[in-house]
Length: 289
Length: 313
Image (cartoon, rainbow over all chains, first blue to last red; front, side, top):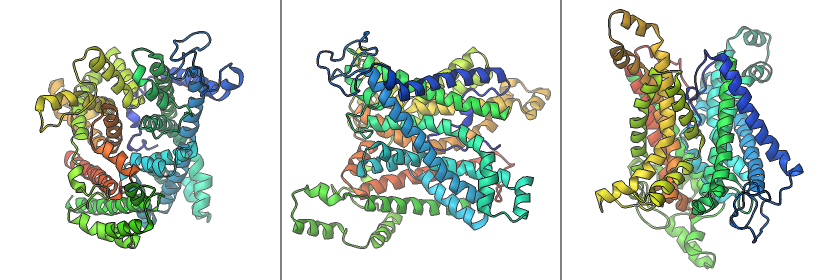
């Protein structure tokens, strides 16, 4: 299995705790990070259904920047909005956008990469130059342009962020396809007259899928960070829709008087991204073992 | 090796053409244009038409691209549509480069320490710290730095920027926090990458063989292992540049620095296509040159590298 490509913004595979010999430890990491991730996903998507949280943008002038209490578990923001509720709804949007944008980026990237890897020759060259163009193009500028000109709905942001993962997946899936191209079962299928589309769909994709999925976790971690960055620049989801990045920005000015406004979203952001990264990495290590 | 480099340069040129055309297309096809942002919503149709001709926006899109490309090839990136300033003049930026140097200066020694004690507590501590820095957006450590050094200890100015031409000391004082903030991400990535490679390389047979020949371990590290471990780092440096530009935009916003990032956001907002195009092109050039240098260094360091299509793509 080739190592993931080194692409702007995405973690090089070797960055995390690289200890292939310590198999058991990776199992533990897998369980712990997977558990944290599962909890976050569960509460963000299903929490608002059974937890007694108010509307995330509900204004409550009696409790402005209140410290955490029983009524407001994480305290409140500048308009008295409940931070727990904002975390849950903001987290749901962040995760949704990150997952969707990775899926879109992966689909487009793999289309480039698989066709390139299977066909080879001039098609390979042309497609890979296209991927190179995307790679050399500063993805943040593309995202900024899309968000500025098209809009800031969660769908616009998903599209804007998906550009980040296209070149990464393009490179990676091509490497995977090239690695599989001359394996016996692929050669046999080709000799039996299978077309390229059939080869990709029935032979390359199923074999590359686990690796691509694993890579998706690392890509997702990056998307969440990028989304928070866009929010910080004022180009994330338009207010009053809550977002983790937007919450941090809003709380920045009150860091000394109401630290929970920054600390709570930072902790959640960090916990999510760290566990996504560790989960992806542990999965990769396990598959390699 | 000469023909290999030539081929790489050729590829780079093709990619740059693609990048510039993509940018041009993107900026001109998306809704909104510079005329509205210059004249405002209440402009008369006559004034709009006059400005269109003045800025050359009435010409065919493709002709305009060729025209722009022609002057760009001569080093002239045009003038800002909104302000009339020369684009090449406004895009002078040292922040990302400085940050990269700081990141390297910090990460290399740390990587050696971590590799030497691989698997031990120091290594795991550094790994944990790196993971945290990789997993937060650049503005989070930035905010903490401002809070600690700017607001609490008051040893550094919290925000603002003093130009180098005004005062060296002032420039350094305003530059420390932004540079450190920007360097943290690269610091973590480079450090972990180098550490992993150092560990992998020091387990190779040639390292054992060198030891067996009677070389001392520090010398083996320095002359054999370190040299071979630099290759992934070099490749990654080139790739990291794009991410660094993104980080610069955020860090400048946070510290109130009037730099290329602010310029970019404002220009995108004002539909100032020539400025955006110039920034994209320079970023892409820097990226391609970095990759090219990485390739050349790679061939220079590693005699096994015989490209011949093996790693094409």
